[in-house]
Image (tube, rainbow, N blue to C red; front, side, top):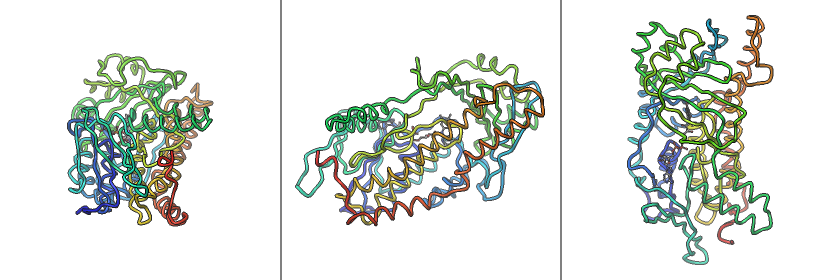
Length: 463
Ligand SMILES: Cc1cc2nc3c(=O)[nH]c(=O)nc-3n(C[C@H](O)[C@H](O)[C@H](O)COP(=O)(O)OP(=O)(O)OC[C@H]3O[C@@H](n4cnc5c(N)ncnc54)[C@H](O)[C@@H]3O)c2cc1C
Protein backbone atom coordinates (compact mmCIF):
# COMPACT_ATOMS: atom_id res chain seq x y z
CA UNK A 1 0.00 0.00 0.00
CA UNK A 2 1.31 3.47 -0.81
CA UNK A 3 0.98 6.09 1.92
CA UNK A 4 -2.02 8.50 1.77
CA UNK A 5 0.52 11.23 2.72
CA UNK A 6 3.57 10.50 0.60
CA UNK A 7 6.85 12.22 1.53
CA UNK A 8 7.06 13.29 -2.12
CA UNK A 9 5.77 12.47 -5.62
CA UNK A 10 8.06 10.96 -8.26
CA UNK A 11 7.21 11.09 -11.97
CA UNK A 12 9.11 8.68 -14.21
CA UNK A 13 8.98 9.72 -17.84
CA UNK A 14 9.45 6.63 -20.05
CA UNK A 15 8.38 3.03 -19.50
CA UNK A 16 11.40 1.24 -20.99
CA UNK A 17 13.74 -1.02 -19.02
CA UNK A 18 15.16 1.87 -16.96
CA UNK A 19 11.84 3.51 -16.14
CA UNK A 20 10.10 0.27 -15.19
CA UNK A 21 12.97 -0.95 -13.02
CA UNK A 22 13.01 2.46 -11.31
CA UNK A 23 9.30 1.93 -10.54
CA UNK A 24 10.08 -1.51 -9.08
CA UNK A 25 12.96 -0.24 -6.99
CA UNK A 26 10.93 2.72 -5.65
CA UNK A 27 8.04 0.43 -4.70
CA UNK A 28 10.17 -0.70 -1.74
CA UNK A 29 9.43 2.72 -0.21
CA UNK A 30 5.65 2.99 0.32
CA UNK A 31 5.97 6.63 1.44
CA UNK A 32 6.95 7.66 -2.11
CA UNK A 33 4.22 8.13 -4.74
CA UNK A 34 5.23 6.89 -8.21
CA UNK A 35 3.65 7.69 -11.58
CA UNK A 36 5.10 6.39 -14.87
CA UNK A 37 4.28 8.37 -18.04
CA UNK A 38 4.93 6.49 -21.28
CA UNK A 39 4.61 8.01 -24.76
CA UNK A 40 3.47 4.81 -26.49
CA UNK A 41 -0.10 3.54 -26.41
CA UNK A 42 1.14 0.31 -24.86
CA UNK A 43 4.41 -1.00 -23.55
CA UNK A 44 6.18 -2.91 -26.32
CA UNK A 45 9.71 -4.10 -27.08
CA UNK A 46 11.47 -4.97 -30.32
CA UNK A 47 11.63 -8.72 -30.90
CA UNK A 48 15.42 -8.87 -30.53
CA UNK A 49 17.69 -10.29 -27.84
CA UNK A 50 19.05 -8.70 -24.69
CA UNK A 51 21.80 -9.98 -22.43
CA UNK A 52 22.45 -9.41 -18.72
CA UNK A 53 25.58 -9.87 -16.60
CA UNK A 54 25.95 -11.06 -12.98
CA UNK A 55 26.38 -7.50 -11.62
CA UNK A 56 22.93 -6.62 -12.97
CA UNK A 57 21.40 -10.00 -12.24
CA UNK A 58 22.07 -9.46 -8.52
CA UNK A 59 19.99 -6.26 -8.65
CA UNK A 60 17.14 -8.11 -10.37
CA UNK A 61 17.38 -10.77 -7.64
CA UNK A 62 17.11 -8.09 -4.95
CA UNK A 63 13.94 -6.83 -6.64
CA UNK A 64 12.46 -10.36 -6.61
CA UNK A 65 12.33 -10.61 -10.41
CA UNK A 66 14.88 -13.41 -10.74
CA UNK A 67 12.53 -16.38 -10.51
CA UNK A 68 10.29 -15.46 -13.43
CA UNK A 69 13.13 -13.93 -15.44
CA UNK A 70 15.09 -17.14 -14.86
CA UNK A 71 12.19 -19.08 -16.42
CA UNK A 72 12.32 -16.77 -19.46
CA UNK A 73 16.11 -16.97 -19.90
CA UNK A 74 17.71 -19.25 -22.50
CA UNK A 75 19.47 -21.12 -19.72
CA UNK A 76 18.56 -20.82 -16.03
CA UNK A 77 21.11 -18.47 -14.50
CA UNK A 78 23.74 -20.08 -12.22
CA UNK A 79 27.11 -19.11 -10.79
CA UNK A 80 28.86 -21.94 -12.61
CA UNK A 81 31.45 -21.04 -15.23
CA UNK A 82 29.88 -20.87 -18.68
CA UNK A 83 30.94 -19.68 -22.12
CA UNK A 84 29.66 -16.11 -22.40
CA UNK A 85 31.03 -15.67 -25.93
CA UNK A 86 33.29 -17.58 -28.32
CA UNK A 87 35.47 -15.16 -30.30
CA UNK A 88 36.16 -16.13 -33.88
CA UNK A 89 38.01 -14.39 -36.66
CA UNK A 90 35.38 -14.93 -39.34
CA UNK A 91 36.44 -12.70 -42.23
CA UNK A 92 38.37 -15.43 -44.05
CA UNK A 93 37.58 -18.73 -45.82
CA UNK A 94 38.68 -20.77 -42.79
CA UNK A 95 37.46 -19.18 -39.53
CA UNK A 96 39.61 -19.25 -36.42
CA UNK A 97 38.21 -19.52 -32.86
CA UNK A 98 40.84 -17.70 -30.84
CA UNK A 99 39.34 -17.56 -27.38
CA UNK A 100 36.34 -18.16 -25.19
CA UNK A 101 35.13 -15.68 -22.62
CA UNK A 102 34.13 -17.86 -19.67
CA UNK A 103 32.34 -16.06 -16.84
CA UNK A 104 30.19 -17.05 -13.84
CA UNK A 105 26.84 -17.97 -15.41
CA UNK A 106 27.86 -16.70 -18.87
CA UNK A 107 25.62 -14.23 -20.69
CA UNK A 108 22.06 -14.37 -19.29
CA UNK A 109 20.12 -13.81 -22.49
CA UNK A 110 16.44 -13.13 -23.18
CA UNK A 111 14.04 -12.41 -25.97
CA UNK A 112 13.28 -8.74 -25.22
CA UNK A 113 9.46 -9.13 -25.18
CA UNK A 114 9.81 -12.01 -22.66
CA UNK A 115 12.03 -9.87 -20.44
CA UNK A 116 9.65 -6.93 -20.59
CA UNK A 117 6.59 -9.11 -19.95
CA UNK A 118 8.02 -10.29 -16.62
CA UNK A 119 8.89 -6.75 -15.53
CA UNK A 120 5.46 -5.39 -16.50
CA UNK A 121 3.55 -8.29 -14.91
CA UNK A 122 5.39 -7.69 -11.63
CA UNK A 123 4.80 -3.94 -11.56
CA UNK A 124 3.59 -3.11 -8.06
CA UNK A 125 -0.09 -2.05 -7.88
CA UNK A 126 0.99 1.16 -6.11
CA UNK A 127 2.78 2.37 -9.26
CA UNK A 128 0.41 4.20 -11.59
CA UNK A 129 1.16 3.71 -15.27
CA UNK A 130 -0.14 6.32 -17.76
CA UNK A 131 0.27 5.46 -21.45
CA UNK A 132 -0.08 7.79 -24.49
CA UNK A 133 1.63 10.52 -22.43
CA UNK A 134 4.51 11.99 -24.44
CA UNK A 135 6.32 14.60 -22.37
CA UNK A 136 7.14 17.79 -24.26
CA UNK A 137 8.77 19.81 -21.48
CA UNK A 138 8.65 20.55 -17.78
CA UNK A 139 8.55 23.78 -15.75
CA UNK A 140 8.83 24.63 -12.07
CA UNK A 141 5.58 26.09 -10.79
CA UNK A 142 5.05 28.68 -8.05
CA UNK A 143 5.83 27.52 -4.51
CA UNK A 144 2.77 26.92 -2.30
CA UNK A 145 4.61 28.39 0.71
CA UNK A 146 8.04 29.71 1.66
CA UNK A 147 9.05 26.35 3.16
CA UNK A 148 7.62 24.14 0.41
CA UNK A 149 9.70 23.81 -2.77
CA UNK A 150 7.70 24.51 -5.92
CA UNK A 151 6.14 21.57 -7.75
CA UNK A 152 7.30 20.53 -11.23
CA UNK A 153 4.68 20.73 -13.98
CA UNK A 154 4.89 18.19 -16.80
CA UNK A 155 3.48 19.17 -20.19
CA UNK A 156 2.39 16.38 -22.50
CA UNK A 157 1.83 16.44 -26.24
CA UNK A 158 -1.92 15.76 -25.83
CA UNK A 159 -2.26 19.10 -24.03
CA UNK A 160 -2.58 17.65 -20.53
CA UNK A 161 -0.34 18.37 -17.55
CA UNK A 162 0.70 16.53 -14.43
CA UNK A 163 2.58 17.55 -11.33
CA UNK A 164 5.40 16.01 -9.31
CA UNK A 165 8.20 16.83 -6.87
CA UNK A 166 10.94 14.79 -8.60
CA UNK A 167 11.16 14.08 -12.32
CA UNK A 168 13.13 11.10 -13.61
CA UNK A 169 13.82 11.20 -17.35
CA UNK A 170 13.94 7.58 -18.50
CA UNK A 171 12.79 8.56 -21.98
CA UNK A 172 15.56 7.07 -24.07
CA UNK A 173 18.13 8.41 -26.50
CA UNK A 174 15.99 11.31 -27.80
CA UNK A 175 14.99 12.30 -24.26
CA UNK A 176 12.76 15.35 -23.87
CA UNK A 177 13.74 15.56 -20.21
CA UNK A 178 17.44 15.74 -21.17
CA UNK A 179 16.68 18.49 -23.68
CA UNK A 180 14.75 20.64 -21.18
CA UNK A 181 17.23 19.95 -18.39
CA UNK A 182 20.33 20.84 -20.45
CA UNK A 183 18.67 24.00 -21.82
CA UNK A 184 17.86 25.04 -18.27
CA UNK A 185 21.45 24.38 -17.13
CA UNK A 186 22.88 26.19 -20.18
CA UNK A 187 20.63 29.19 -19.49
CA UNK A 188 21.86 29.39 -15.90
CA UNK A 189 25.52 29.06 -16.95
CA UNK A 190 25.08 31.73 -19.60
CA UNK A 191 23.38 34.07 -17.13
CA UNK A 192 26.22 33.53 -14.67
CA UNK A 193 28.79 34.53 -17.30
CA UNK A 194 30.03 31.01 -18.09
CA UNK A 195 29.38 30.72 -21.83
CA UNK A 196 31.79 27.80 -22.31
CA UNK A 197 29.94 25.75 -19.70
CA UNK A 198 26.65 26.69 -21.39
CA UNK A 199 27.99 25.33 -24.70
CA UNK A 200 29.07 22.09 -23.01
CA UNK A 201 25.53 21.54 -21.70
CA UNK A 202 23.97 22.29 -25.09
CA UNK A 203 26.38 19.84 -26.78
CA UNK A 204 24.71 17.00 -24.87
CA UNK A 205 21.22 17.57 -26.27
CA UNK A 206 21.50 15.85 -29.65
CA UNK A 207 22.71 12.27 -29.85
CA UNK A 208 25.64 11.68 -32.23
CA UNK A 209 26.20 9.06 -34.88
CA UNK A 210 28.96 6.57 -34.04
CA UNK A 211 29.76 5.90 -37.71
CA UNK A 212 28.34 2.37 -37.29
CA UNK A 213 25.12 0.77 -38.48
CA UNK A 214 23.78 -2.40 -36.97
CA UNK A 215 21.68 -4.88 -38.94
CA UNK A 216 19.34 -6.79 -36.65
CA UNK A 217 16.98 -9.71 -36.98
CA UNK A 218 15.98 -12.96 -35.31
CA UNK A 219 15.24 -16.30 -36.98
CA UNK A 220 14.22 -19.76 -35.86
CA UNK A 221 16.88 -22.11 -34.51
CA UNK A 222 15.36 -24.82 -36.74
CA UNK A 223 16.15 -22.76 -39.84
CA UNK A 224 19.81 -22.64 -38.78
CA UNK A 225 19.77 -26.35 -37.91
CA UNK A 226 18.60 -27.05 -41.45
CA UNK A 227 21.44 -24.96 -42.89
CA UNK A 228 24.13 -26.49 -40.71
CA UNK A 229 23.16 -29.13 -38.12
CA UNK A 230 25.29 -28.62 -35.00
CA UNK A 231 26.10 -24.98 -35.81
CA UNK A 232 27.98 -23.61 -32.76
CA UNK A 233 25.52 -20.71 -32.40
CA UNK A 234 22.77 -23.23 -31.52
CA UNK A 235 24.78 -23.94 -28.34
CA UNK A 236 26.43 -20.68 -27.37
CA UNK A 237 26.87 -16.97 -28.13
CA UNK A 238 29.52 -16.18 -30.74
CA UNK A 239 31.22 -12.93 -31.82
CA UNK A 240 32.63 -13.16 -35.35
CA UNK A 241 35.30 -10.50 -35.84
CA UNK A 242 36.52 -8.83 -39.03
CA UNK A 243 37.93 -5.59 -40.34
CA UNK A 244 35.34 -2.79 -39.82
CA UNK A 245 32.64 -5.46 -39.62
CA UNK A 246 31.47 -7.83 -36.91
CA UNK A 247 28.62 -10.18 -36.14
CA UNK A 248 27.20 -11.10 -32.72
CA UNK A 249 24.85 -14.07 -32.63
CA UNK A 250 23.24 -15.95 -29.74
CA UNK A 251 20.23 -18.14 -28.88
CA UNK A 252 17.17 -16.50 -27.28
CA UNK A 253 13.57 -17.50 -26.44
CA UNK A 254 14.72 -20.58 -24.51
CA UNK A 255 16.88 -21.61 -27.44
CA UNK A 256 14.11 -21.65 -30.07
CA UNK A 257 15.32 -18.51 -31.87
CA UNK A 258 18.62 -16.91 -32.81
CA UNK A 259 19.41 -13.24 -32.24
CA UNK A 260 21.51 -11.78 -35.07
CA UNK A 261 23.26 -8.37 -35.01
CA UNK A 262 25.84 -7.43 -37.65
CA UNK A 263 27.77 -4.14 -37.60
CA UNK A 264 29.32 -2.32 -40.50
CA UNK A 265 31.38 0.66 -39.31
CA UNK A 266 33.10 3.67 -40.82
CA UNK A 267 35.08 4.86 -37.83
CA UNK A 268 36.13 8.03 -39.65
CA UNK A 269 32.46 9.12 -39.66
CA UNK A 270 32.14 9.09 -35.85
CA UNK A 271 30.30 12.22 -34.57
CA UNK A 272 29.18 13.26 -38.07
CA UNK A 273 25.51 13.94 -38.78
CA UNK A 274 23.55 10.90 -39.91
CA UNK A 275 21.32 11.49 -42.93
CA UNK A 276 18.10 9.49 -43.15
CA UNK A 277 15.97 7.47 -40.74
CA UNK A 278 17.76 6.02 -37.70
CA UNK A 279 15.88 2.74 -38.03
CA UNK A 280 14.52 1.23 -41.23
CA UNK A 281 13.74 -2.12 -42.77
CA UNK A 282 16.22 -3.06 -45.48
CA UNK A 283 16.49 -5.98 -47.91
CA UNK A 284 19.08 -8.54 -46.74
CA UNK A 285 20.86 -8.75 -50.12
CA UNK A 286 23.45 -5.99 -49.50
CA UNK A 287 24.40 -7.35 -46.11
CA UNK A 288 24.75 -10.90 -47.43
CA UNK A 289 26.99 -9.59 -50.22
CA UNK A 290 29.09 -7.67 -47.69
CA UNK A 291 29.82 -10.93 -45.85
CA UNK A 292 30.31 -13.06 -48.97
CA UNK A 293 34.04 -13.68 -48.31
CA UNK A 294 33.50 -14.72 -44.71
CA UNK A 295 33.78 -18.32 -43.50
CA UNK A 296 31.10 -20.96 -44.27
CA UNK A 297 29.43 -20.93 -40.85
CA UNK A 298 28.79 -17.19 -41.28
CA UNK A 299 27.30 -17.97 -44.70
CA UNK A 300 24.92 -20.45 -43.02
CA UNK A 301 23.74 -17.67 -40.69
CA UNK A 302 23.28 -15.29 -43.63
CA UNK A 303 21.10 -17.86 -45.39
CA UNK A 304 18.60 -17.66 -42.51
CA UNK A 305 18.16 -13.87 -42.73
CA UNK A 306 14.87 -12.85 -44.32
CA UNK A 307 13.68 -9.69 -42.48
CA UNK A 308 16.29 -7.18 -41.56
CA UNK A 309 16.30 -3.75 -39.94
CA UNK A 310 19.18 -1.29 -40.02
CA UNK A 311 19.85 0.78 -36.88
CA UNK A 312 22.18 3.75 -37.13
CA UNK A 313 24.04 3.57 -33.84
CA UNK A 314 23.91 6.89 -31.99
CA UNK A 315 25.32 7.76 -28.58
CA UNK A 316 24.85 10.55 -26.05
CA UNK A 317 27.90 12.80 -25.70
CA UNK A 318 29.28 12.51 -22.11
CA UNK A 319 27.09 14.88 -20.05
CA UNK A 320 28.52 17.30 -17.46
CA UNK A 321 25.79 16.18 -15.08
CA UNK A 322 22.84 13.78 -14.92
CA UNK A 323 20.83 16.10 -12.66
CA UNK A 324 19.54 19.60 -12.24
CA UNK A 325 17.65 20.55 -9.08
CA UNK A 326 14.95 17.90 -8.66
CA UNK A 327 15.26 16.49 -12.18
CA UNK A 328 17.49 13.53 -13.12
CA UNK A 329 18.05 11.47 -16.24
CA UNK A 330 18.84 7.75 -16.34
CA UNK A 331 19.59 4.99 -18.86
CA UNK A 332 19.87 5.90 -22.54
CA UNK A 333 18.61 9.42 -21.79
CA UNK A 334 21.75 9.94 -19.70
CA UNK A 335 24.43 7.84 -21.41
CA UNK A 336 23.23 5.96 -24.47
CA UNK A 337 26.23 3.81 -25.42
CA UNK A 338 27.36 1.40 -28.09
CA UNK A 339 26.21 -2.18 -27.52
CA UNK A 340 29.60 -3.97 -27.56
CA UNK A 341 29.42 -4.99 -23.93
CA UNK A 342 25.67 -5.71 -23.82
CA UNK A 343 25.59 -3.07 -21.09
CA UNK A 344 23.15 -0.24 -21.94
CA UNK A 345 20.13 -1.78 -20.23
CA UNK A 346 22.37 -3.10 -17.44
CA UNK A 347 23.53 0.45 -16.75
CA UNK A 348 19.94 1.76 -16.90
CA UNK A 349 19.03 -0.83 -14.24
CA UNK A 350 21.94 0.30 -12.04
CA UNK A 351 20.87 3.94 -12.41
CA UNK A 352 17.32 3.01 -11.43
CA UNK A 353 18.51 1.08 -8.40
CA UNK A 354 20.77 3.95 -7.24
CA UNK A 355 18.05 6.56 -7.74
CA UNK A 356 15.65 4.53 -5.61
CA UNK A 357 18.37 4.13 -2.99
CA UNK A 358 18.97 7.88 -2.65
CA UNK A 359 15.28 8.85 -2.89
CA UNK A 360 14.19 6.17 -0.42
CA UNK A 361 16.85 7.02 2.16
CA UNK A 362 15.29 8.27 5.44
CA UNK A 363 17.37 11.50 5.25
CA UNK A 364 15.83 12.40 1.89
CA UNK A 365 12.81 14.64 2.26
CA UNK A 366 10.98 17.10 0.04
CA UNK A 367 13.49 19.81 0.96
CA UNK A 368 16.65 17.71 0.52
CA UNK A 369 15.74 16.09 -2.79
CA UNK A 370 18.22 17.99 -4.91
CA UNK A 371 21.06 16.96 -2.59
CA UNK A 372 19.99 13.31 -2.92
CA UNK A 373 20.16 13.65 -6.71
CA UNK A 374 23.67 15.09 -6.57
CA UNK A 375 24.70 11.91 -4.74
CA UNK A 376 23.17 9.86 -7.57
CA UNK A 377 25.12 11.95 -10.07
CA UNK A 378 28.39 11.70 -8.16
CA UNK A 379 28.23 7.92 -8.09
CA UNK A 380 26.52 6.89 -11.29
CA UNK A 381 27.87 9.36 -13.87
CA UNK A 382 31.57 8.45 -13.71
CA UNK A 383 30.79 4.73 -13.69
CA UNK A 384 28.26 4.72 -16.55
CA UNK A 385 30.41 7.01 -18.69
CA UNK A 386 33.40 4.72 -18.13
CA UNK A 387 31.34 1.71 -19.28
CA UNK A 388 30.25 3.68 -22.36
CA UNK A 389 33.91 4.30 -23.20
CA UNK A 390 34.80 0.62 -22.64
CA UNK A 391 31.89 -0.44 -24.90
CA UNK A 392 33.18 1.85 -27.64
CA UNK A 393 36.68 0.44 -27.25
CA UNK A 394 35.40 -3.15 -27.39
CA UNK A 395 33.61 -2.26 -30.64
CA UNK A 396 36.92 -1.07 -32.06
CA UNK A 397 38.59 -4.30 -30.95
CA UNK A 398 35.75 -6.43 -32.40
CA UNK A 399 36.34 -4.66 -35.73
CA UNK A 400 40.15 -4.66 -35.68
CA UNK A 401 40.21 -0.90 -35.60
CA UNK A 402 42.93 -0.68 -33.05
CA UNK A 403 46.59 0.31 -33.40
CA UNK A 404 48.54 -2.60 -34.93
CA UNK A 405 45.48 -4.51 -36.11
CA UNK A 406 45.47 -3.41 -39.73
CA UNK A 407 46.90 -6.43 -41.52
CA UNK A 408 46.73 -10.03 -40.52
CA UNK A 409 49.41 -12.15 -42.21
CA UNK A 410 51.00 -15.37 -41.00
CA UNK A 411 48.95 -17.75 -38.86
CA UNK A 412 51.28 -17.60 -35.83
CA UNK A 413 51.42 -13.83 -35.88
CA UNK A 414 47.63 -13.72 -36.18
CA UNK A 415 47.20 -15.97 -33.16
CA UNK A 416 49.55 -13.78 -31.09
CA UNK A 417 47.73 -10.59 -32.04
CA UNK A 418 44.30 -12.12 -31.58
CA UNK A 419 45.29 -13.17 -28.05
CA UNK A 420 46.15 -9.54 -27.38
CA UNK A 421 42.73 -8.49 -28.74
CA UNK A 422 41.02 -11.00 -26.48
CA UNK A 423 43.02 -9.90 -23.42
CA UNK A 424 41.96 -6.28 -23.93
CA UNK A 425 38.30 -7.16 -24.57
CA UNK A 426 38.19 -9.23 -21.39
CA UNK A 427 39.95 -6.61 -19.22
CA UNK A 428 37.47 -3.96 -20.39
CA UNK A 429 34.54 -6.19 -19.51
CA UNK A 430 35.51 -7.67 -16.12
CA UNK A 431 33.45 -5.11 -14.19
CA UNK A 432 30.33 -6.96 -15.36
CA UNK A 433 31.00 -10.19 -13.45
CA UNK A 434 33.81 -9.32 -11.01
CA UNK A 435 32.18 -6.35 -9.26
CA UNK A 436 28.83 -5.57 -7.62
CA UNK A 437 26.93 -2.35 -7.03
CA UNK A 438 27.06 -2.91 -3.24
CA UNK A 439 30.08 -0.68 -2.63
CA UNK A 440 28.42 2.16 -4.54
CA UNK A 441 25.28 1.78 -2.43
CA UNK A 442 27.35 1.97 0.77
CA UNK A 443 29.08 5.12 -0.58
CA UNK A 444 25.74 6.70 -1.47
CA UNK A 445 24.41 6.07 2.04
CA UNK A 446 27.58 7.52 3.57
CA UNK A 447 27.26 10.65 1.44
CA UNK A 448 23.61 11.07 2.42
CA UNK A 449 24.29 10.44 6.08
CA UNK A 450 27.50 12.45 6.28
CA UNK A 451 26.08 15.55 4.66
CA UNK A 452 25.40 18.54 6.89
CA UNK A 453 21.93 17.83 8.37
CA UNK A 454 21.30 15.89 5.15
CA UNK A 455 20.47 19.19 3.50
CA UNK A 456 21.41 20.19 -0.01
CA UNK A 457 21.05 23.32 -2.06
CA UNK A 458 17.71 23.85 -3.74
CA UNK A 459 19.41 25.36 -6.76
CA UNK A 460 16.28 25.80 -8.82
CA UNK A 461 14.32 27.47 -6.04
CA UNK A 462 16.89 30.23 -5.61
CA UNK A 463 16.96 31.03 -9.31
C1 LIG B 1 21.59 -3.56 -31.05
C2 LIG B 1 21.49 -3.33 -29.59
C3 LIG B 1 21.74 -4.38 -28.70
C4 LIG B 1 21.71 -4.16 -27.34
N1 LIG B 1 21.96 -5.20 -26.50
C5 LIG B 1 21.99 -4.98 -25.17
C6 LIG B 1 22.26 -6.06 -24.26
O1 LIG B 1 22.48 -7.20 -24.66
N2 LIG B 1 22.30 -5.78 -22.94
C7 LIG B 1 22.07 -4.52 -22.45
O2 LIG B 1 22.14 -4.32 -21.23
N3 LIG B 1 21.76 -3.50 -23.28
C8 LIG B 1 21.71 -3.70 -24.62
N4 LIG B 1 21.40 -2.68 -25.46
C9 LIG B 1 21.07 -1.35 -24.92
C10 LIG B 1 19.66 -1.29 -24.38
O3 LIG B 1 18.73 -1.73 -25.32
C11 LIG B 1 19.32 0.14 -23.96
O4 LIG B 1 20.42 0.70 -23.30
C12 LIG B 1 18.12 0.15 -23.03
O5 LIG B 1 16.97 -0.33 -23.68
C13 LIG B 1 17.86 1.56 -22.52
O6 LIG B 1 16.72 1.56 -21.70
P1 LIG B 1 16.00 2.92 -21.32
O7 LIG B 1 14.87 2.54 -20.44
O8 LIG B 1 16.99 3.91 -20.85
O9 LIG B 1 15.47 3.50 -22.71
P2 LIG B 1 14.41 2.88 -23.74
O10 LIG B 1 14.42 1.41 -23.67
O11 LIG B 1 14.68 3.54 -25.04
O12 LIG B 1 13.01 3.36 -23.17
C14 LIG B 1 12.59 4.70 -23.28
C15 LIG B 1 11.08 4.74 -23.14
O13 LIG B 1 10.67 6.09 -23.06
C16 LIG B 1 9.56 6.30 -23.93
N5 LIG B 1 9.61 7.70 -24.33
C17 LIG B 1 10.44 8.29 -25.25
N6 LIG B 1 10.22 9.59 -25.30
C18 LIG B 1 9.23 9.87 -24.41
C19 LIG B 1 8.58 11.07 -24.00
N7 LIG B 1 8.89 12.27 -24.52
N8 LIG B 1 7.61 10.99 -23.05
C20 LIG B 1 7.27 9.79 -22.49
N9 LIG B 1 7.88 8.62 -22.84
C21 LIG B 1 8.85 8.67 -23.79
C22 LIG B 1 9.79 5.33 -25.07
O14 LIG B 1 8.57 5.04 -25.75
C23 LIG B 1 10.35 4.12 -24.32
O15 LIG B 1 9.33 3.27 -23.84
C24 LIG B 1 21.41 -2.87 -26.84
C25 LIG B 1 21.13 -1.82 -27.72
C26 LIG B 1 21.16 -2.04 -29.08
C27 LIG B 1 20.85 -0.91 -30.01
